[in-house]
Length: 362
Image 1 (tube, rainbow, N blue to C red):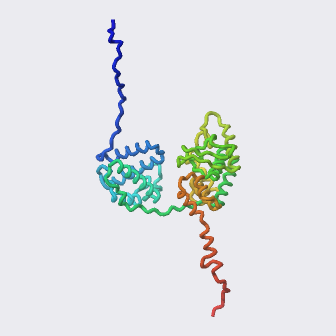
Image 2 (image 1 turned 90 degrees about the vertical axis):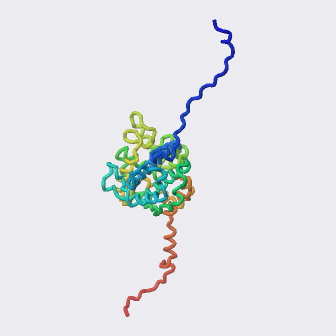
Image 3 (image 1 turned 90 degrees about the horizontal axis):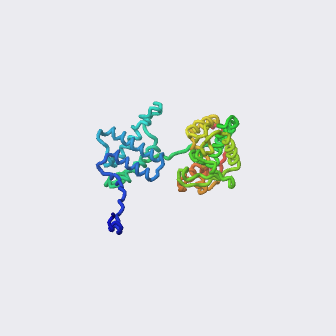
């Protein structure tokens, strides 16, 4: 028989809290590799995208390769001094072999010395890592405080002219009746020119992103480089071509990706395959300049400003958060200097004295 005490109110027992694992603390004695892994974990927690993460991974591999040329000892964070940074930059410029350990790259492409733009990217990534180390008290002094910096030559872009863009459109249009693939390429080129999109933004476009009432397309924040959504107006012809492509996509049998631009298997297009095909179109169009997909965006943005478009609306169309990023197009579109020099220069028609040449010799 149970005791009467059994029915009495029992004292409340606190529920045991689940065990929370404390994160491993980074200490100064850890090697560069261990600390860099913690840094990558921090960047992943910040929701950094894979291409940006890859820049830091490439940085670490190049730092290790450089350190191996100087010492056989383990690389530590405090080894990165101002002199270390200067010597590292010199090594990148004059001694580093591009694609040295890549078996898939032909030997003719394994040249010595990186481009200035690549070196600047490495230096910026290294500075980000060093700043993180300083915040974590892994470094008492920031070596970049005394670093004079890497002076990069101004990047010049040889954009396509309006005539070259029209020739490219003519070539793709001439092929558009051959097959679904060729028609899809023609529509894609139209959209890249009309909307000034990045190639990834175009390839990730979904049928639901097309506003058939206002004739605009939505670039979702998840697909935009700036992580901000934006609306892009479409011309009547581009809108009509997109609708025709959507009708063509209905002929696919079975399940396909929910995208506007599909491969022959109904999946997302590979941008490298798109570049390969567009290079063929460019060659047929007589374009001698180095062709890459982003060149279309550069060229159309330049033409936009040359046609009296304003820089603020261009910034919104391109999806840049800062107007200063668009200044490069303003510089390339500035043809007024040449025009004014032709009219007002010392040897221009307005200032030069027209005299009849005396061909008789004395």
